[in-house]
Amino acid sequence: MERDWAAFTSTPSRLTAEPMIREDRDRFLQLVAQQGYVDQYTGIRVSATGRRFYIRNTTVWNLIDAEGIYRGQAAAFAAYDDVVEKGS
Image (cartoon, rainbow, N blue to C red):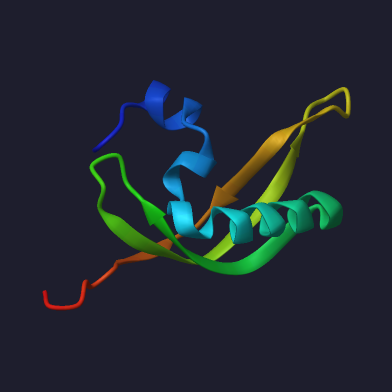
């Protein structure tokens, strides 16, 4: 495990995306905010140690509390693959 539960649940997801694709990711998350959820998402993430991996068939949804207040977004995925670097 690269992060304990407290670090895992408090790390902003934007910090786990590669810097060069953060603008695309921001547009994607705006779409989730508008629609309520998006499924079948695949993208590259970066672990706490810098390991790059694809998350596959991911569902991303809005988090709304009991009072109906938007609190952020969450994601769930069951499959991931390591990114194979060229020359590896």
